Amino acid sequence: MDYRVEWSPEATEDIESIAEYIARDSEFYARAIVSKILAVSRKIPEQALIGRIVPEIGDKNVRERFVYSYRLIYRIKGCTITILAVIHGKRLLEHMPSRFE
Picture 1 (cartoon, rainbow, N blue to C red):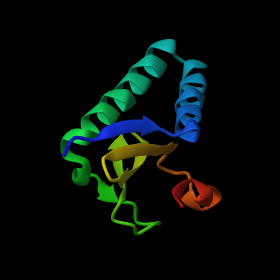
Picture 2: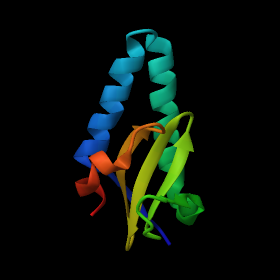
Picture 3: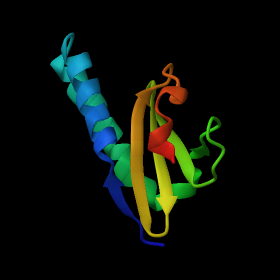
Picture 4: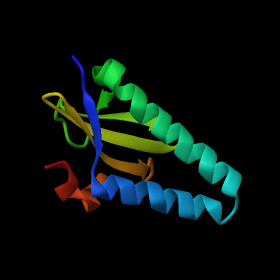
């Protein structure tokens, strides 16, 4: 199946926040991490179901891939994959339930 990848506005903000935070210490690492996250997001359509089901949500259509210490969370709906969030692995999802409904 051919999937189209879309980014939610919140996930785009997540990427920007991650880049800003890391750039305080290193512009180089900020670019490298954001580049890796974007590269992984582009590969999701090739094997969308390879990501694990997000345990806190339990919906087979909401999955995640790990990129370094970040969780790239996405939803599969029809032919569209929507990137819902990019969060640090230590952050709790309970503080952002509306993103996953």
